[in-house]
Image (tube, rainbow, N blue to C red; front, side, top):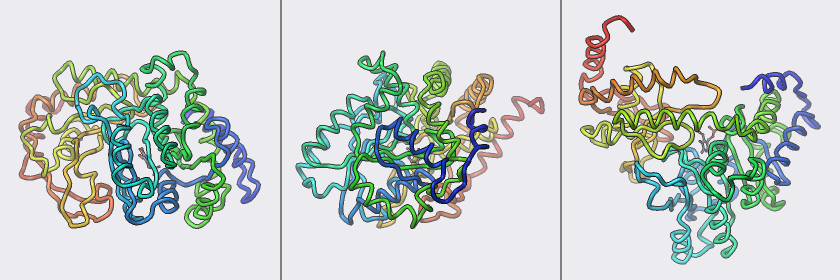
Amino acid sequence: MSDRQLGAMMVADDSYAGSATYQRLEAKIREIFGHEYFLPAHQGRAAENIISQTLVKPGQLVPMNYHFTTTKAHITLNGGTVEEIYGDVALETTSEHPFKGDLDTAKLEAMIAKHGADKIAFVRLEAGTNLIGGQPISLANMHAVRKVCDQHGLILVFDASLLADNLWFIKTREEAYRNASIRDITLEISSLFDIVYFSARKIGCARGGGITTKSEDLYKRMRGLVPLYEGFLTYGGMSVREMEALTVGLDETMDEDMISQGPIFIDYMVRELDARGVPVITPPGGLGCHVNALKFLDHVPQSQYPAGALASAVYIAGGIRGMERGTLSEQRNPDGSEPMASMELVRLALPRRVFTLSQVKYAIDRITWLHENRSIVGGLEWVEEPEILRFFFGRLRPTGDWQERLVAKFKADFGDSL
Ligand SMILES: Cc1ncc(COP(=O)(O)O)c(C=O)c1O
């Protein structure tokens, strides 16, 4: 958080009804997104619960550029099925395509023709595609998707959690918006969506979430679920201090110098690792530097979770906590079979304002050493596998003694000097 955010927390108004804190947040949301209506929620996934319960009927489909774990869980819980209709470039691990997060509108048209618009609950676009390397969507693609939705009367929903980085990429990679302000780009984006929702942790550097809409009808359909699951409409499960921090955080997200820090650090880390032969997702995206575990550990079968194994190995080699974004982050099919993820990634998140360049250089150094010693690293197997969102609480063990051998090699190379 910034000093301005921390300062704002001190002037919070905890009135249950008529809270001035809420009014400040609502006014900021209107100013930034241009939508008339706002519903607060305690996290991004709480917003997903409300949207899915309101819009998804059993048997319906939800097409999207790519899923996020909690989004998919809520849609399936309500009897819907997620259909990812990304372009062919989305899964190319090395590429120079500036917008690998774009949805393929031809596939969307084909889906509508095959199933009929009634079978589609809503279309979802996720800014900065979390699970395929933080790759952005272009504003041109958002316009194209809106056009298809208009032709078929479909509701278009935007997951704006990772919008900050995506705004930066629109500004720097999309010629038509090079001279547009971040505020104008944001307003143009939200004008294309019926619903925008977000995790405040990412977009606003505060804890919370929310849903905005320009439709009174959708607002009224979702509103009743806020007091049921979140809290009264003036806080939605968020503390008023966090709401003050979020109001300032959203404002700071409109600052180019602020939102550029993450992508610039990520760009540096990706290019340095790439130059050292470490397989990373290119072009550099948002959110973090994504290491391609399928290639890094090409001797570990996907059924032994190479991205999970690599995340453990990175922790052993450097005390660096990355996140598995691969098969472990998937959920099993209803028949118990296990879908293999399209990508096995280790995400080394670089949130703005958190790391210094020397920390990034340290991580590059340790990951390079690990890459040179990658043949030691083996796979993982389950000890305890929960049914829902298994990557949160599941426990795994290494297949064999590779972790001990990795530590021994580390000590042989560096002694006790580190
Ligand atoms: C794209 C995206 N959507 C939704 C969520 C869920 O948000 P939260 O963690 O606030 O529940 C996240 C969280 O990482 C996310 O990255």
